[in-house]
Length: 194
Image (tube, helix red, strand yellow):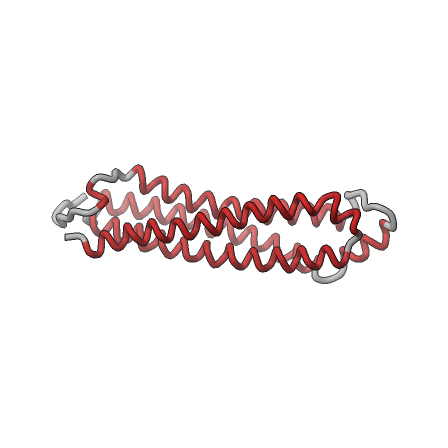
């Protein structure tokens, strides 16, 4: 790597290992949200396929599950899981590729840091928007579930499921905000560094 761009910022004492930790954290939170969606889809699909023991009036309950918005929701859920996994993979590959390119070819250290943290900051904002969108979707879905299925089924399974989902989504939200603050500070340090 070329060292012709001298600068003194926080990165002067932070080795590249910490960059890898940031990238790994961003990739993990995307994967965690994706897995949460997959688990929800798998359970709803199991109910629709009649593999879940519905309490009382099972036939009527199953018919309710097959109506909107449940059926369309799980179909879109599967597509969203695939999209999330592809986006996470592309993000990770691009970051690694940028490291290799700048380290071996033409980039300076400052070029590398600006690129990586600008890209990471955009990814954090994307994840934050997705987390908020998922929280809105989850609240709507949970409300629809409570109104359209039996109280026995809701209380026997969905109470714990909703709590676990809430923990996932709120952790994602706080993690994204923390990443935006930290990476934004890193990027600012680079932009004003002399």
